[in-house]
Structures are given as structure tokens and as C-alpha cells.
Image (cartoon, rainbow, N blue to C red):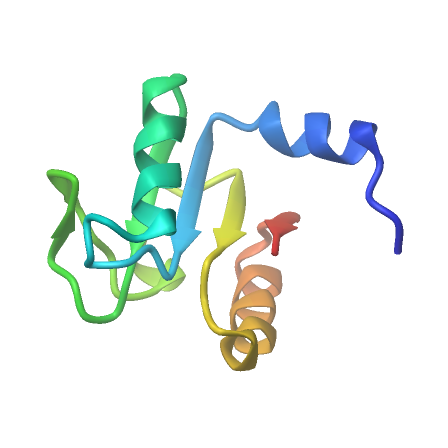
Length: 99
């Protein structure tokens, strides 16, 4: 599948986005991206099985525990976790997933 500019713009029109796999390490790329997206006005929701908070935000252990729901999911997980997360998104009715 080819990603188009329209695909990117569609994803970025979402306001509340979960970042699944955001790192506990403040120097990691995922943390930099998390901070930048918050700076640009996105309501970013951190999801990491092993963290209690990220950048001062409550961190959820799974998408099932996120409330209120998110509009999209940005995956920052290892590739072997991707299928499980996409299935979780499908179960929860989250139509936009970026890998």
C-alpha cells in the first residue's frame, strides 16, 4: 500500500491520538515525537505497559483502559507487537493506525 499525502493529512486531522509504545527513556525518539505532537496541540495519550506516567500524563497499560477513547493510534512498538495492537484497535473501533 502506498501512503499518500491525503492519508497523512487524514491521520493528522485527529485530535486525540494514543502513542502505543512510547518509551520511558526521555531521550528516545518516541518521547521527542510525543512532546512535539503535544506542542502542536494534539491530545496525546501515552500507552506503555511498564510506565505509570509519561511527560506528566497518566500512562495506560493498554488501549482497552484508555478513557475517553482515542481517534487514532500511533504505533511505536517493536514489529512483533504490531499485529496484536492492530487487532486491539479493531476490537475498540479505532479506524486510524499509523505504523
